[in-house]
Structures are given as structure tokens and as C-alpha cells.
Length: 455
Image (tube, one colour):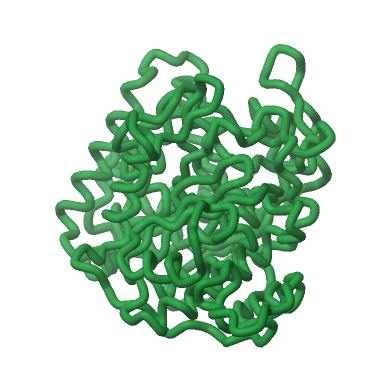
């Protein structure tokens, strides 16, 4: 009777009949039972069931609620006879995490300790903000779990997202990995990314046998099949770009990857990069009465002609369709198939926002003999993406394969594009089997496949 509530009313409350109970009765009951703040809030939640504001916050409240209840039922049914959980649930204890340390055992990272702190944000509407941060570096996993990696792989950064429930939005600031490839460590099939990956591995080997501090790419264990490239396009939503890896590229031993020299994403000024390449070229002395357009070096000589104008969209102007067509040509038997010593191309995923950024992201060294570093190459490729609808489809040991949907529209523009190609890859004409600069430039008018190879 300390709460000023009749025996009949209290009996009804104990049986869970809280409908219509006033706030004053709930306050009196909480005081009599000496409930703390968390228990008091739980009592009010039981009495109010669901915040009426939820019906306004959710469009289609009935559908959302039904789906939520169904999801809870599925989770509860996974292990309905867990004795420990049943005992804990039967005690009716309630708890809210305000601060503390979360201790986790990740199968790849190892033991983690994350400090967390939660605070109530001013109303309205009622919200809470939670922050998680690492206490220290992860403890490598035991020999019974995944192979130990450099703990620096698992750098954490703060990112925020909104978690909505029936009561009110809760703003959570959680620790999340920087590199989206880490999701594949626990989800090898890529199901959570909307993918159905074939068996593959995360690669982190670099030049000189070093192990990079994070995965550089995911690589399929078996050769790519026709359609593999387009099948992985949904991975872009997670910040991963599909690309074919040629059999001549040293991935497993890391001999062709040196991300330490790749301050990604590189110099944003493509014209400055190409002009620098152009001026570093060893220009031959022109012969008397020589038609430079018929030479291997073109009509411009040591003078950098500037960037070419944007191309003209082809009949098939969808870059993804064109890239998939090229990928199939590089996979299927034929003159363009990527093959070396009986090995064939594999499909890969690289953490990058654009296909142009792939060389810089993995630290590709295939053009190092020509003093072309990966960040500068990616800068030029990004410009070509914008002007010519280019997509980087395949990376080999010393070659890049690009699809094109907007080639140059005039002979004059083609000569400018050829100059960019010559600066980008000095041997593109002489080593490519072309008779002259003019012949190469004219071929660009209709070409939908640009190939660059560095000796």
C-alpha cells in the first residue's frame, strides 16, 4: 500500500495489464519499489508499449512493425532452449549501457577492447549518442583461429549512422574498418554486400616479401568466367571496383605491388602530369623535310600540345556495358585473351572509388621502368574517364587494358589524344607495331579498346 494503489489494481499491474495507467500511479509504484532510472524507464515503456511518435516517424508503420516483429521471432527461434539466456530473461533485470569496455574476440583481428560511452541528447526528440574507440592495438588471434596478420591492418575510424527504433532515433557513433575488403574476412561470399563471390583470398603481399598493413585486393582462386566483371558491379556500393588481374602480374608474392610508393590518389592535375611526362621524353632531332606525322613521335615535337577535347560518345555509350564486353574478350579464347604460361586472368576487387584509381590503390609497378608511378597514372586515367568514357578493365604485369565509349571525333582531336598516349606510355606507337604516328592517331577514331604496355 506504500504506492497508494489498491490490492486489486496492483494485482492487475503485476499480471501485465497496464493499459490506461496514469503517470502518477507509475511514479508512485516506481518510488515504492525503489526503482533506479533504468528500471523506471523500463516500467514506462511497458505501460506505453510503443511511442505514438513512431507511427509518424515511419512511413508505413504497420509494415515496418510487422517486419521487425518477424525478425525478432526469427532470431529468438535460432536457439529457443538456451538455458542461460532463459534464466537471465526470467530474472526481469534491465540495464542500459552508459559507459564501459566491450571485450570482443574477432576471428581475424584477435582480441579487441573498445571503450564506449553513451549520453542522452537534449529533447525533443529523445536521442542517445554512443561512441566506441579502441583501448589499444588488437591482440593477435591464437593458432586455432585465422593466420596472424600485422595488427596495423585493423585501424579504426569513427563513422556515424542512425539507428531508428519505435521509441525514437538513436544516433550511434561506431568504430568501423577503413578498408571495405575487411568485411570479406568474415563474409567470404560477399553476401552482405549483395554479392555471390567465388572462392578467393585477400591479398596483402608487397614487393620484397613485405606484408602490407591492410588487404590490397580480393582475388579469385580460379580463372575468371565470362560475365565475372559485370557480376561484381554491385560491389561499387561498398567502395570496391571489379578488375581483371592478368596472369603476368605478381600478386601472390607481391613482386609487382608497392603501395608504399603510392600516396593515393595522386596529383589531381592531369595536364601537369602529362606535360611532365612529355617534357621528359627523349625527343629525336627531326630530319630535313621530314613529315612528322609519318614519324613515330608525331607532329608536335618537344612542345606539349595540351589536353585533347572530350570525345564523341559512340553508339554504345554505357561505360559499364563496354567494359563488360572488353572483359569478356580478355577472358574468352581469342586474340585478346589474357594468357601466360597456361594461366589466365582472374577477377579481383580493389578498394577504390573509380576504376582509374586501381593502380594507385594497389601500388602497381608495371610502368616503373619508364619512370611512371601509379598515382600519376591514376590521375591521367581519371581524366580519361571524364573525357573519353574510359574504364580500366584489366591490369597485367606491365600492361593496362581500357574500354572506351567516347573516342575522339576528328582527326585533329585524335592527334591530340595520341600525344597524350605517347606521354602516358612512350612505347605505345613504336612498340605497338604501328607504322607511324598518323596511323595510330587514325585508329583511335574508332577504337573502343586502348592497351598500354611498358617494357
